[in-house]
Length: 286
Image (cartoon, rainbow, N blue to C red; front, side, top):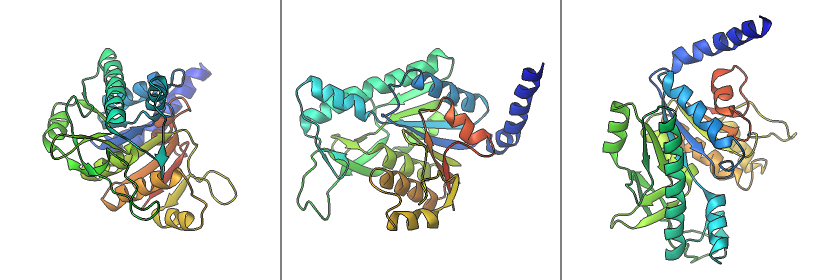
């Protein structure tokens, strides 16, 4: 009986958040670093289905870096990165589109199997992300990343229809150029830009770190955008965390309510972050 009462307490703790966010849009980036963890993808899909059932509109952006690297290795292609971006020639772009297409079908298929209406878009099977070629500034000067792109906008009609029809959108980070060419776009950037475009209540980046840590190394549960910028200047936020935080700051500047960076390795971390008072990662607020 005590366990049953404890479960009721958990539901009551979630109640104010369920009421607050019903009808709102959440943009969730599901990182490639956690997709292949045992049970990780299944747990993530369960969380998304819970949000959808509760009247929230979840939009999923996924990458697939580890699977792309594995596919490159299998074909004898060396992975090369500049400023954390994968150098993408024509062969690698085709391979990237194939891998992300498979991941897209897999996630959308899991959702449908559990009874949710899901619509998958992976670039070469239909694109939502408009992209243009990314040109590096600074060092290394003149480095051409090939078919690496940046977000140039979004096709509005699929976004409108998905919300109207209560479908869960599942998007890969493949973007479509003006002439129909495909680009490999950073999934964090896509998620941040789309969250701003949709005026989402929340942007959630699910990755393989616990969140943002302060100078002492302790996890910061809540920080402001101004504090986040200061931590970047001071070098406390560094390396791969910088683009994630900048994506969150970009989303906040475009009207997104809150941004979260959470550890997707923790089972049901998405629900724990949103529906509990303390959460499990870092929330960045205005």
